Amino acid sequence: MTNRTAAARTVAALLVVIVGVPAANAAPPLGGEMNHMLVELMPDNSFTLAFERHSLLHMQGPASGYAGVESVLNATSFNGQYGWLVSGFWAPPAGGQVWIEPVEQDERLSVYCGRAMPGVAYFQPIFGIDGSGPLLPWDGSMLHNYYAVTQLGVFTATYRVFMGDSAGNPLPGYTPGEITLDWQHGQFDMDGDEAFTPADVDAWANAADGDVNMDGVTDGADYALLVSEAARHFGPTCPCDLTGPAGGPDGVLNLDDINVFAGAFVAGTAQADLSADGVLNLDDINLFASCFVAGCP
Image 1 (spheres, rainbow, N blue to C red):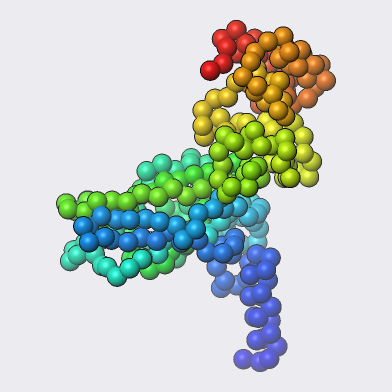
Image 2: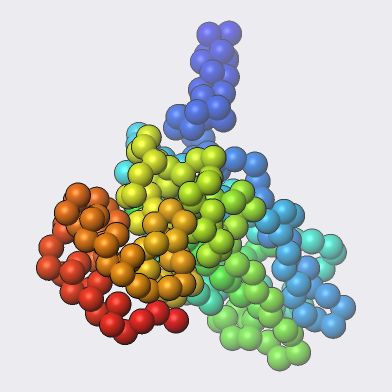
């Protein structure tokens, strides 16, 4: 190898690490420091799953320039930081196989296998994506799968690890373990606690960075997106209660809420877009009226 070739390969590798530029024969960047899910089989044959450290990971992107099997990442934002890793010293019994399956998985997520394993190809869709089966046979070596999305939001997936036979049937005498992974695409963690909770909605008004949709402007559209995602994860909010902090709820419905909604509707601001379709019309008025008459929990 010439010095020039060696230098070129070094530069390409550095680009992948620093800015995520795809290079030939290099896996897509994980998106940050590895974050492992430690899988341990205890003496009583129960699985214990734990994070090295828990955090709300960021999707990176949008991606472009990938070829071959990795091209599925193009036009998506993705992350591969979460990795499965054996903890302790243990092995499956004779004829046994460790399996991973989704218990709950956000339907907006696409998932691709991070390396080839027996019966599974590199970047093959897994966990039910694109017609794939729900079970993933894990060989016990470190595995970082890639998760991709095409929209802003907070995304969660809960997985179960169990001991089964070669066909994926659970073996008697073993207790499975579960763990929940989460990511954000956008800025939804308003209080900086590395989690997305209802408290983030309340913290938006005083957050150092309230630009939820990452468009460079902090405005009502950010708050609307935050509230919408909170409703997806934690149940419906009270959209007609508009007189609390940052235009959110204060727990009381009265004439003040009617005036705020009317003012926002006339001004054409996102606060009055209760249907979250980007248009202010009779649908929003009907939603407000129905909400106000029904009251809020």
